[in-house]
Length: 113
Ligand code: 5GP
Ligand code: ZN
Image (cartoon, rainbow, N blue to C red; front, side):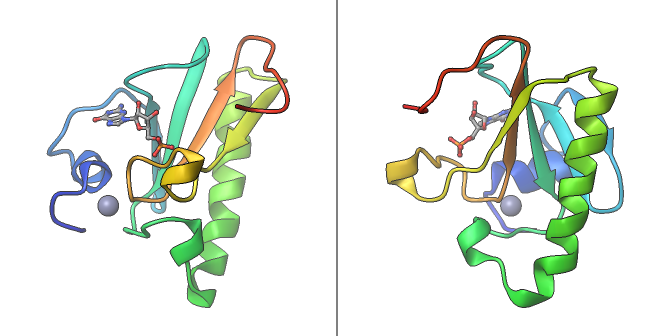
């Protein structure tokens, strides 16, 4: 838990969210400002500022997060979808707690903006 971190507050329940999944490692909830018909955020319960800040001891957790994303996408009946994590302000990261965007339900352009 990191003080003043909005996603730590969501993980702890201090801030409300529309959760679609929770397990020992992570919470998945609807993005407040959705960019696609399905726009979820998958957030580890551990406060890691970004993927760039993860350490070798986090590797097992990162692997399990990928498994959770796969299971969540299946439960949401997504067949085509995109998984994105922004790292740094220039890439669009605005919350400094690792999170994976899961976007689907419409055709997604490439390259991303
Ligand atoms: P980033 O810009 O860091 O890649 O993504 C942060 C995402 O978190 C944004 O898409 C933003 O809409 C979402 N977000 C920020 N604050 C909240 C919140 O309090 N609740 C929810 N559900 N989403 C949030
Ligand atoms: Zn946090």
